[in-house]
Structure formats: C-alpha cells, structure tokens
Amino acid sequence: MTEQLLNDQASRLLTFIERHPRLFVLTGAGISTDSGIPDYRDHQGNWKRQPPVDHRDFVASEASRQRFWARSLVGWPLMAAARPNGAHRALAALERHGRIERLVTQNVDGLHQRAGSRRVIDLHGRSDTIICLGCGERSGRDQLQRRLAKDNPAYYGHHATAAPDGDADLELDFSAFRVHDCDRCGGLLKPDVVFFGDNVPRPRVEDALSALDNSDAVLVVGSSLMVYSGFRFCRAAAAQNKPIAAINLGRTRADALLSLKLEAPAAALLERALGGC
Image (cartoon, rainbow, N blue to C red):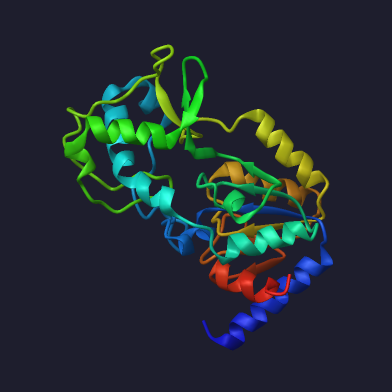
C-alpha cells in the first residue's frame, strides 16, 4: 500500500470517527496478526486451515480432548508471548478520550486489556482462563500448561504452526497424551472460550446489544464477520440505520451493509488515523 493511499484511507477513517463520537467497536483475528497471532481466513473469507475443535466433539470424545490439548500444549506459548500492537493501543487511546461506548472482541487473546482498554466484552471468552465443565471453577492457563508439559514431554518438544486460538497444526498419534481433569470434582477442563458448535452466553450478547443501542455507529476492525456471533451486531446496527465502517483485508459478510470499507492493515491505518489521539 502506498503512502498516499494509506493517508487517504486514514483521513476517511478519522472523518468517520469524528462524525460518530460514540462508537461500538467490533474486532476480530485480523487486529492481532501484527502481534504474531495468525488469523483464520483468507481475503475471500474462506478457512486457511481446518476449523477449530467442535464443542460437542470435545465433550463427547476423549480422543478429541487428547488431540486438542496436545496441539494446544504446543501452540499456547505463542499466545502467551503475544503483545498488543499499534491497533490495540490506538483503540485504547480512543477509549480514554471517551469515544468508545463498548469494544466487543471475537478474539480470545486478551490483547485489548493488555493495551489498556477497559470497556471490553470478550464475546468468545479468554484462552488464558481454564474452566471446569463440572463445577465451574476457573483457574489460570499457565498452571495447567506446566502440568501438561511435565506429564507429556514427548509432545511438548514438537514444533508446529500456531493458530489464532492457541491451537497448533500438529498431526500425530495422540493416544498416549495425558489429559488433566478437575482436581476438585473430576470434571472436564477446557479453555474458558466458546468453541464452535457452542453458543455465546446470552448475558454477553445482551450486554453488547445494549451498548449498540447506546452507540451511534459501528467500527469493525479485522473481522470477516463470517461467524454469526459477530455479524449479528452489524445486522442489528443496519436495522437501526446506524452507519458501519470496516477495516479488513478482504471481503466481509457485511459488505452490503457498510457505509465505509477500508482495506488496509489495521495497525498501520489506526496508528495513522489516531496517532495524535
């Protein structure tokens, strides 16, 4: 992208933000690529890799859990080491200036909070937290990571391409992998995230829709919106005749609803538009 084109898009974005002082911001995997976390989809919105684990398979199948945790054991260090980039910091600064009603993220990496954003709804949960499906107890992911690494040294030594959710593209015989259950009740442990095939908790959706009602425009950053859990907010905004802007490299499911479409790297564009914020 040329400097002239980036400056033009930054100017258009800044105009949109200045015209709409109460923004509902929706972010996806594309905002975290500059932090070293891969995204899910290509420019056409198609999967770049196999979809993540399905919730029903994880709950029903020990083999599925072994495969998930073995791959996560390898992929988690990238997620844990990731740091906020310029896009996260720009949105945090915009929030400090009172311009963001609510930031809803489809990501599970926690990078918005690390950048300083406080008005965040983690729509799909957080990968740095573990939940027991039996008793509901929550604990930190680092603790479980250490236990899994200690009990599965043969798997921990592998290297593989990481994925946006802390998974990794690893294909082995996982039948010898030791999975840990809850020490308190013996229940199944999983990351406190919404797996495919599961539903976003209704209170989160209602909280986000309430924030959308109080906003005067939507800004989408780094999401193709192919998953309905995010797309629903664009549909709701369109039904309320609220303008929608999107920063995304490639097509989105909401292209027909957009007032402004900017195809540029999120960090470069937001830093250019909001550098003085």
